[in-house]
Image (spheres, rainbow, N blue to C red):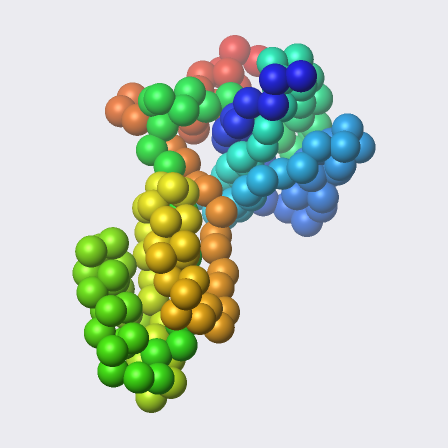
Length: 176
């Protein structure tokens, strides 16, 4: 089975239980969600869910078909990875007790275009956004210094140019 990475973006009603029903579709089929991002859109009654997962073409087609059947799911789109802007946010706290380590970490912060958001005598907390590969490279670089804590948002994505999910939803709504 070709376990190709894919990205789903959907607009759903902003109501309790919607995320549980969506994640349940993946769980029942034994597939893992690699990344999940959820947030309110410009319309407070609608949330956007972005899911990164792996699966073959058959699975992708099936999951889209099953998601479209859910009552609270307004539109589902399998995103074209070449026509999509994707970003992830990482907050990472690193040991920085001695001046040499602190200087090297600050140099990496500049090179990776990250930002120090908290500074104590024993640690630095850094924020970085970017594509997953950049974020992962930053984590790998900082690992030898001692990562005290780390949290990631998961991938969030939006289509390039005129690829606007809410417009597609509104067009489909008008056809009903």
